[in-house]
Image 1: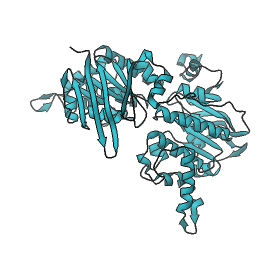
Image 2: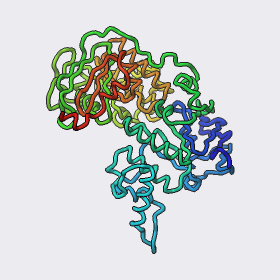
Image 3: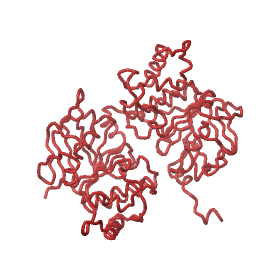
Image 4: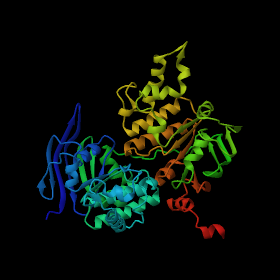
Length: 501
């Protein structure tokens, strides 16, 4: 039996005007976790869709268990034992866990579904990966992390030998990610082969045995994970050295731009206080559910506080809605840029000018020339990769979509920018570009509040760091002196016995 369960050689895929894959090769060993890495647009999605039977390659070979195969559709992929675990679980939220696991291949008895056997077998599979999920629970009642586990179990129920995990930890907390790591390793040790797609270096170096890099649709190389470090992987992905991945300059902060005192919102956070000064990047971090996003939404006027005070440039103010916040110089980059930051079917131009349309009014009509001048200036400033500002936002990569949201913020001439997970879901090259933009904005005297779950990002891009735990500020650190361990200790929930002591 060959060491490799899967061998792919000389695979090409051409779409009109675009060569998505150019003579790509890849091998997957039995019982290994193999990271497939590259920037947005590198060809990873096309590669995965070919394995899943969604696309057909124009040429090349796919060899599975030593035999050449043709994966003509998703059902064929399922028959070959290939399953994709998507970032957003493709489940039926109103059905039970057992129903989701066995939908499409139910246990039948005399033409009727045998529900007793369905739940018994579902429980066996759930127990086998070490989770306490109840087979009778509705999937919609589960967390995102647990919904992903149900998808993994569903794949196992169909005897999947190859699992493709697409950005599995993008929406998970650190603790949930570590639980997923443990389950992935357990599956690997039993002989399941896993292809891991992730932008997060923590996933790649914490989980993978090997890594293959694609760039511009081409195969760049495959390495044992022990032979790689951050700089080598970045160089392979972008084709150049990013000599200063975190280009944060140490600046002397100016006057106070934002002060929050004992801000509270019942059920979400209580007595939150912090400051942001001109030219300063302040990190706000904590575990998922700590209340970080809710705090910035309240400062921005999307929700109203139950108590406390907000000061802008040392003047106490009330922010009743986002429109008023923008008038006062506050900008917010939301965590979910596609749902809350962009109108994907609109042009880059109109997305950028949307918050400030009144500026471009000429008599009763808008002035397209003035709009284009503003959006053109900002797309050049932020180095947004697009043919024209009349391109539809949906056509851009994730990193460039993020830059369009930043451009929209800059169009209001903000004094303070709040960035909620600014590099979530973007590739390493786009991350470096966003960090550079943040540094340039700080140099211009803008106060920046950055909410982030990525510890390296928080430490390297902040001047000061506030940590939230269970709706309260639990610690403040100087970013040049703090360690990841100190931040995590401050973020972890306090045991009940310690709280009562």
